[in-house]
Figure: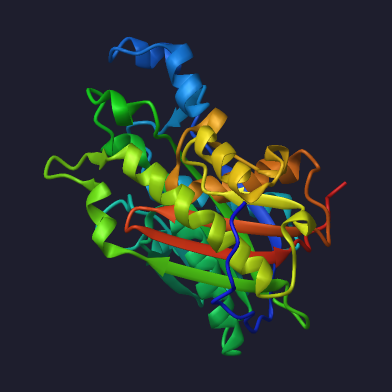
Length: 328
């Protein structure tokens, strides 16, 4: 069990989540497919990571296409949302189509949000939670009321399929939520920290491929993430046993299980997207949330901790009350 005095106070919030959507490409890469590329096998991959498959974008699908598809899925499922009322789009991604224009600007054009801030956020696997924090801050200014927050990645394009240590991990996908102004905010506490000295542990090399020291990242996550989660709870006087759902970055199922063990949190309280999607970086948390929402696991009033962590080394947490009712 880890314990820590909270360093992060509860923060002002006028935000809550009012809609959700997601998208993964049709093509899958199974463990059997990986076996044909490198010296590995299905049992080893599942035992070490829990991953059974990942999705791969088509050759003509860019990150913007996945992000747009996720937002369109959200709009189709929540038809009372009108694109012209959206006044902000934040896209968390490390695999933007190009340095500019932003993925967010392409989402804006595609959905017809006619008067809208559009910004990309680069914080790797912590990006989606970081963007949620930013959306709340923008809403608190009073200048914004409806902000779409997206996590979208095409990591298979920067994966070296000759490197056994990384090619088993990564997949493509996108998830989106609508963050709206509310009379009583549902975002309860937040934290973030970065240790730039650990940047060498996960980076893009000169060949534009992901390089990762998995052992060191695993050790860092196990020694920092549990304390960060407890900080979120302690900031508002909550205990770990009061948490309904824990939604960490889905890097590796075994890592999630180990973090839960450190927290003395039943692993069945952790929501993941890694088994069927692989590690999708900034998309992993919204994909896990939407899968749980579709399965009827998320109910209004539940206490949920979101926690992103990864390259940087950066981590970002958010404790919230779920307010989105199940659609019949």
